[in-house]
Image (cartoon, rainbow, N blue to C red):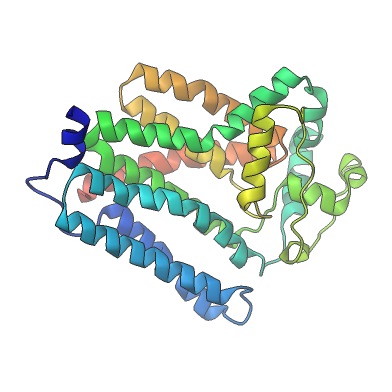
Length: 321
């Protein structure tokens, strides 16, 4: 009964307008619509992209209307949960833009080679191939969405007064990453290595593939022990929505960094010490499975910290809702 009362008790002072995070989604929608306007003849799937944006706006308005009729915690949560769910649509949408630009992987692979003297994404899984280690790495990578759900639900049930702030920081960080991915076409090792050939990568030769990924989405076979449960989960996730895009910086690492900082800010030790080991595994897993270069991981760490503190400051100073 307590949970039912918690979810359905009507608010005395409900938020009248859109939430800050909904304004962020609308802003991203307008930005990408303008970009489509200027590149309409080059965009590959303009109709489906336009329809998707109208649907996203319709969902925001519909859920706002439901909340206005029944202003309770459940309808409030639905507004946030819907935007989190739509991230799985917005992510591959970035590929529809950056496939118009020439690929930059040869530059990033060259930097990787210059810094480390090798390609860690190529050698890591080969060196640490034991099934236990492989499953740990895939566990770390597969924990991405469960971690988002865990932190979101914790704030909703245990830190409700901070729920809007948490949602604003988390979702706005996602959309900042998406803006970067649109204009920075880096596919990552899992696409670039098989495209140019592993023999060239091992020899330190990194050809410029130009617009190759505009029409090719072939991925390397996922490294590691292929008999594992978490290995299969990562395979399913890749088949569902992976595209040759979004490698730099690593949003997996960046968002998990944001989640770690949110867990710390919650002042709940149990939450923090659940997120911490999975965060560490994520940092290693992203280049173990060849999704990213190590420089992507480092950039993800830095950007995650910067985004968290910058967005927290914006939210507090502007007194957003």
